[in-house]
Length: 396
Ligand SMILES: Cc1cc2nc3c(=O)[nH]c(=O)nc-3n(C[C@H](O)[C@H](O)[C@H](O)COP(=O)(O)OP(=O)(O)OC[C@H]3O[C@@H](n4cnc5c(N)ncnc54)[C@H](O)[C@@H]3O)c2cc1C
Image (cartoon, rainbow, N blue to C red):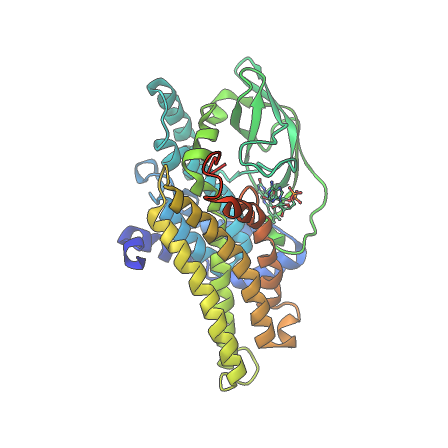
């Protein structure tokens, strides 16, 4: 499975990420302490061409697919999970307009418009290093396609968008905030690229969270913001079709947490070998037992995730979709479990800031809460799976 996933093209992309992220662990302390966006890391990602990781080569990108992104995101999360999470929001938009849109059923004329618009989006990313965010959450419903109160009023040449998004990661850094809203023209869901510098855009509130502090996920307030119709990246109705037919879209952020798990393992093994300023502790059998446990937790999460990556495509079977949910739960619960165990093994000094394990302990806690596929939502679906065949909308 591992060899099949790591094609030469994907391996190149992962290696590019490894090289770009070399300074990220060192910088992550400052970003975490100050709850500050990791701008320097993004400069390195830009220089490495990674903003275009999922943009076709003929349009200036690296030509990576969903799996290439997943593997590179895991590698990034290993170096800095916060940067990984922010990068996810950017790349998810390029995946949605690219590989995922290609797998959707769209009438020819609609597809032609979508192609023209996404080429604009790609051009902006590749040539102007445009950064995209994806603030979908409004805090009213857990569903992928429900609970949106943000409205888009149709006007000449575009829309006036009004609404409020919570947890808008990259709030101060993104050039374009891609928001889901309802249009008064057709009552359907639309995805609009709201220019960050447009009149009526405001970033609201403070940002002092437990973990993932560098994501700068403040609230995004929009009041009658003019969004040109060219910034409607996908046609009305496609968002729901994608949620239904390409649900793997909602697991993209778990790859950062899988990487975070790998980073915890890296640190703990070095600690046990005595490479972090204390004497080696590897001969202690209790610690060996804990270390064995940690590897089990990580390998379970990675093996399941890689299995899911091996079958990720449009229109998954019921069993494949079930595995995507179990993968989410295994990673998002596994990461805090692993961080907690690592602190037990590495002891009190590992809790003294700045400490990668202390930070990982806090960062990992956020994973379970990520909607629309939070751990509770996935468990809720798994708990009902196959029990109500007469009424199940199985990817609901
Ligand atoms: C660091 C960070 C960055 C984020 N970045 C972004 C971003 O860039 N874009 C974005 O769109 N969102 C982002 N989010 C938001 C995230 O996806 C969730 O929407 C948010 O964490 C939900 O918080 P809440 O307190 O409003 O949850 P609530 O909606 O109040 O839910 C509370 C709990 O109940 C569970 N729950 C709610 N409804 C159900 C249900 N029907 N069935 C089962 N369980 C349910 C939830 O999973 C959650 O655990 C981010 C969150 C964090 C912490």
